[in-house]
Structure formats: C-alpha cells, structure tokens
Length: 551
Image 1 (spheres, rainbow, N blue to C red):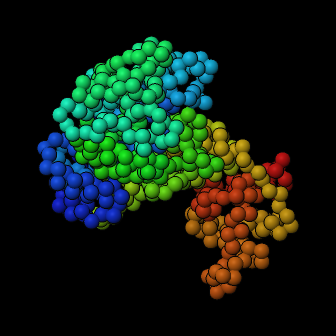
Image 2: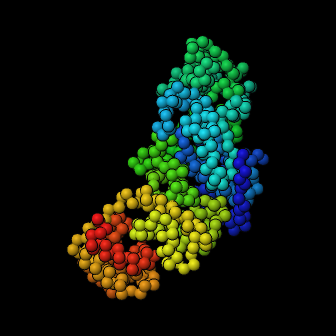
Image 3: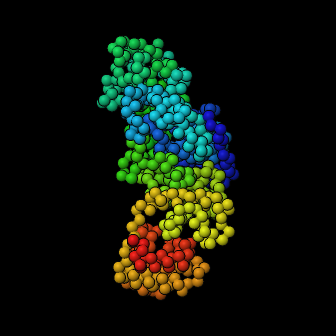
C-alpha cells in the first residue's frame, strides 16, 4: 500500500451536475460504472485494477494504464460525490514464466538457463538489491507511480498465489462448474490445445510447465501431470504450486478479487468475452472494461517491453515533466498514436496551455479540460511566459549550453521573470537544452540562400533595423509579413493582405526557419525575434548571407 492519499475534489452541485453530462471519456466510463454499482448493491469499496507483465522494463503504456484508470476513478468519485470508497490495485503478473529473454537486458546469455522460470525466480540482470528480475521491474514501476503521486496498492501474483488469495476460486467446492474446471481448449489457441489452463510449477526444475494433465480432480483441488523427469506427480492447485494460463488467469483474478473496472489494450479485445465467461463461471461478475489503442514506435510498430522499442518512462522524463506525458495519455485513448521523442514538444506546450486556460472556463468546459483529469481536479497555477517550442529555437539560435545563457534572453524579454519566480520555466529551460542537444542539433541543416532568398533576407535586415529595439512580437511579425508581401515568391493569392493585395505564403516562414535556424518548422517568428533580440537576429541574418551558418 502506498502512502499517497486521494486528493480532495470540488463537490459543489454545479460540478456534480456537470459531471453527469460531461463528454470527456473518463466520465463516460465512470457513468457506466455507477450503473454497475447501483445494480450490484454492495457496500464493499469499488475495486479498480490494472495489470503489469514484468517480463520487461515498464514502458509508458504501463504507466498510461494506471494513469487512465486513475482518471476514471476520479470521475467516479465526483459522480458519486465521493461517498463510495474506492481502491486501485496495480497487479503484477510476476509468476509468469520467462518465455523469451528481453533484448534490452545486460548479459542475455546469463539468463538462458532460466527460460520458463517464474519471473520472480529469474535472477536480476541489472544488479542492485533486488533478488529477481520481477522484483527489479516491479520496483521500477512503483518508483515512478510513487513519484507521480498515484494512490494505489501493489499486488504480486506470486505472493497472492502462495498466500492462498485465489484458493476459493481455484478449488470450486460445491460450486457448479464445467467438468474440466477451467479446461477450455477452444480458448487456448492452436499451439496450446494439448495443454490445460492450469500450469504446474515443476517441483524438480521450478519451471512453469505447459503439459497435458493426466488427471484433474476439482473436488480435491489437485492435478496430476508428468514432470520433466517423466515422473507422474500430483500437486494441489493451491499454495503457489500452479498458476493459470494467462487467459483464464484474467477471469479468475476478476472473480477472486471482485474487480469492478479494468482497462486493457486493443490486443486483448478478442479475448475479453473469454475473460468474462471464466469470471462468471467461477462465481464472479465480469467488470466494466475500457479498451484503449496501443502506442506505436517511430516506425509505426507496436511497442514491446521485450524489444525495448518506443520510449521508456525515464526517457520521456529526461526531456519533459510528467504532466506532459499524462496529457499525451489522456488525449484520444482509442486512437493509435506514435510514441517517440518528436511528440514531446507539442505535448509540453499543450499541457501548459490547458492549465493556463482552466480558470477562465465555465464548469462544463473545466471537466473537459485535460488538466482537470491530469491533476484530479486540483489544477496548479502556472505562468509560462515562454513556450517550449520557443525555448528550443532560442537554444538553437544562441548555441546555449547552460541555463544562464537562456535566462539572459528571457529576463530581457520578460522583466521580473527569474528562475526563482518561475521554477516551472526554469525546469523547462533545462529540458529544452537537453532535448535540443539530443534531437534537434544532430538534424539541423542550413539552407544556402538563392538569389531571391538573399534579397528577402537583406530586406528583412533593413526592416528590422528600422524597428525600435523594444518592439514587441506583434509589431515585429507585421514587419516580417510586410517584407514577404513585396516578393512574388512568397505571395499567396488565396489570402488577403491588409491593403487588399495577396497575403503571405507559409513558404516565407519555412524559408526563414531553414535559412536561419537550420530546420523546417519553428514558432511564430515575430515572437521569436522579440525573445532573441532584434540585434541578435540581424547578426544571424548576416551570418546566413555570409555563408557562416552553412559552414
């Protein structure tokens, strides 16, 4: 059990009423759960569950499952005016056999003797104080969940099996069950139709065995099978002597723990009816489900813990705060999205935009705002005068290697704003330097200006020179647009300028970014010049004309 506690909610009538109509997906799921609990009529705490397979290091999808479930839990609390107790159980399937060795662990050969061993019996390849591979990976998950402040309980499959918490459903007693008590070859897939849903742990080797059963005795709660030595062995299904194959394990766990809500990825969708059926057969009531789309890596492939593709939690947090990661998980959970480094800047800036707009919104929009769900209704007050995208371009233009260089520009642009008055911005400055060094800088490629571009840059330089040194971003942007309107290449007849003539094509700004910053996209150019400085921008133009940037 963690030491976190549930944050207080605004339970005013206007918030509760707005929650009953909100179209935000957590409220839509929570309303389904309210109906379930009303029908169930139980006074037990409502149990939310998430699952984690520690066969590899936890990735952002794992974190996202806990986060999204927490969002539904918070929505449920508001809908019920926080009168019904709730629990969140993060369950680790750490008794699974290690079917293959992950590609992202040190000394993979050292783990080969432990194939098919329960993950809690596989040595920890990462070193440190953890006594098993599963213990290390479980700790990695818990560390981040604790850092983010989730209220949850952690559960280990190995501990639950050995402690007998599943015994009541593993041994049916007088309950009417199918003759094979969990044997359902049709649910196991072609490659396992010769096995049974109950997987014994070999008393000889300790491996999880996929072997046919010689006998299944539901009344006594025992199974008989041929061990790896060929010896016929009878063991109880209790005390951690066996585990269930993953499909029946889902349903068994729901029945044993009386789970009310669990979400899972789209790859489980076709099996959900099987999970539900097994849960109901074992005396439980299948929980409410929410099926989300899977994250993809930069190549559009499914993220895999064993492959280590995509982003890890620590990698995202190297370049951005966890709230931006939470936003990315909140948005369109039923749409497949690429999860790679290039999505970070947009997520960062969108997060701060949602936070800053929150106070001015009516209640119904507040409950639609991702910030409400990310912060469980307790939205911080954050002033972010410079967006992340702008900081990245400031790093690029100034060649800054430390925060002091950037703060010199920021303090001039926004007097009174310092690292101490704006700690969130100070953190963002550090993130920007790291992100630029690792991802932007290696890809920079400055364009050599052609004759038209040289003329345009010269006119831009003259225009900037005529502006006052303290011109704001809007005035500078207008001046930059005026330069483009006089050059045919950058005119856009589909747009209207202030004098009724053609407007400005996006090709103008694309050219500026490629010529001056070595990239194809950038922030609002006038705002950037206001931050970076007119004199500094003119020096950058001089270098571009002299060929010093391409050199």
